[in-house]
Length: 444
Image 1 (spheres, one colour):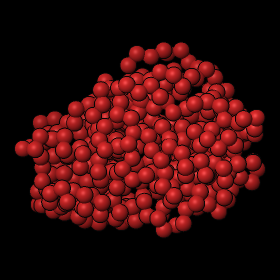
Image 2 (cartoon, rainbow, N blue to C red):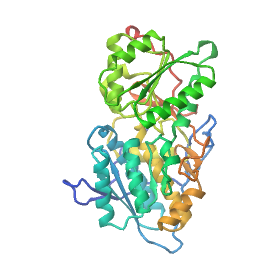
Image 3 (cartoon, rainbow, N blue to C red):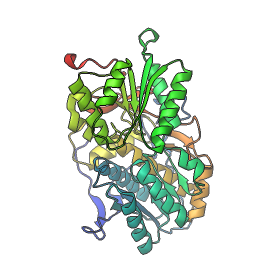
Image 4 (cartoon, rainbow, N blue to C red):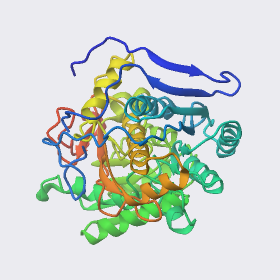
């Protein structure tokens, strides 16, 4: 991908760095994201989003205050350390780029105060409490994983502050925890299951696999996602020949691998943690067994997947919310800003940068629609508006779920060292033809 290698000077400053790990971001000088031309948004499938190619809209209209210039102060955490640390930098960068755009396009100063949650829910709550106690916070942004996002959401609900969270496919809390302030601009378990079926339908009918195996983490989301997969794929005529529960944090997948092999599993689906997913693939290689299709939601999300596995990690599918190859709604501007701002030799932007940037687009459009940073006005705008972001075009249900059927969960595939869009189809050079079947280990 051609890009301007000239660095953009960042207008950032540290507040309480070191012991507190706080970063306050007020913008990146020179970024010109949103407004104007683009090569493309979320595409295809049954999504309500832009279908790619011709759309020039980034969904950011600019200007919101109508004379109210009250600053917008946002609290948030990211996992810079701990078990999810491989995702922390990517989330932070998407937030940084989004805040830069917001400072250019909103008629008010935007400040994001981020701290390290250490991949721990209790630490997250303590860090948010410290930020809110010392700042006039108007909004809270989430971290990574259902564990951390639900902890942040609970804090925001208690504070009466709008909360936006990605990397959070779990639907049950939206329905059972009486959410009033929580919104998830992110594909959910039902969307992941539909996307899995859509990916399978890319395979010529005569070559499609039939036997599906599900490794179910012993968690609420693990059970929810497994049930969606079983229901959606079973209704489509696939045979779920294996559904086995395993302990999150397990380092021994040998029994599951043996069961998958004996049940002739062709499509293996799971949502392990990143370390667990990497361990599982290493043990598949050692056992000389592999399915024809492997989808590890969450597990294969981070860039650390390829760093740890190299070519052994090829073919793996994931649903991280955004994948290089999506078009429209600000994607072109995001790519340009990312490669201008950060010193990297990569040709592809990490998936979680796009996911967190999408969150900032929702935040900006909600504040624009509200014409205010008043929490209730912003919450009401989140409930009533339609949002255009790099993952598609969607609205929210009353409980904060993205409206059913409006988002296609983009499926990425690890190929030649990068996550590339395999489903839905777009005309982007960063998309890839779905690579199927996975070759035996001896033929790679």
